[in-house]
Structure formats: structure tokens, C-alpha cells
Amino acid sequence: MDGMAEKPELSPTDWVRDQTEKILEQGTTDGVEVMGRPVVLFTTTGAKSGQKRYTPLMRVEENGKYAMVASKGGDPRHPAWYHNVKANPAVTVQDGTEVREMTARELSGDEREHWWSLAVDAYPPYAEYQTKTDRQIPVFVLE
Image (tube, rainbow, N blue to C red):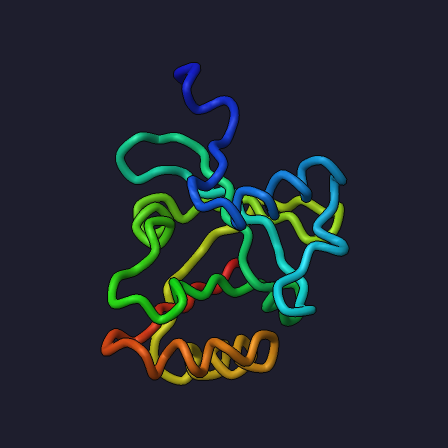
């Protein structure tokens, strides 16, 4: 493995980087929230670079599985991490102090609808984000 992939990169977006630094400093996702809702820290691998990247997202969990919702706040384009997960579905998930290696799979049909409903319950602004964009916001399940 090349030296560049050793330490994951922080987000260039200030508030996302601040969240990630707080999680890394504390060693837990506990107490790190968006609008009073908990987050989970995902570590993805860059599609082209192979560089590990931290991505804190809203905590959407059911029976030990997690969802990654590629909302980008309703932007017309997918977030950069979406392409990384499509290319490299092996993702590290940190929820609280527990860290697990999981595999992401993009959802469709009834399975996507189920997880979308869980996501909106976990973080209601997702429903509004969907109204802002023509793309169907992708949802991955990690198992």
C-alpha cells in the first residue's frame, strides 16, 4: 500500500471537518450532532486516488446495519463520496466507540423506500432535500 493511503483525509468543508476532528479527538461519535440528531463517521476510499476519506453522516441504523444517504443537501449532483463508495464499497463505520468494517450496497425499489423512510425519521430534512433536486437521492445499506 502506498504511503498516501495511511491517514484519512478530512473534508475541505469547514463544518464537516470540524465534526470529524471532534469525533477523532473524543474517540467517539457520541455528542456530535446535526440539529440535535446523532452522526456516524464513515471512512471511504477514493475512487481514483485510493486515499481514505472521512465522511460524517446522519446516523440511520436498523438491526446493526447502517444507511449512507447521498443527499448533499438536495444539490443536483451526488456528493463526492458517492462515487468513492460505488468504486470501493468496503467502508469503515464508527458509531460511538464501535468501529466496524462493512460493505455498502446501493439500494433500489422497496428496499430503498424502507431505508429512505428510516432516514427521514432519523433526519427529517432529508425529505425537504429530495424536493430540491430532480435526482433520486441515493441510499446505500452497509452490512
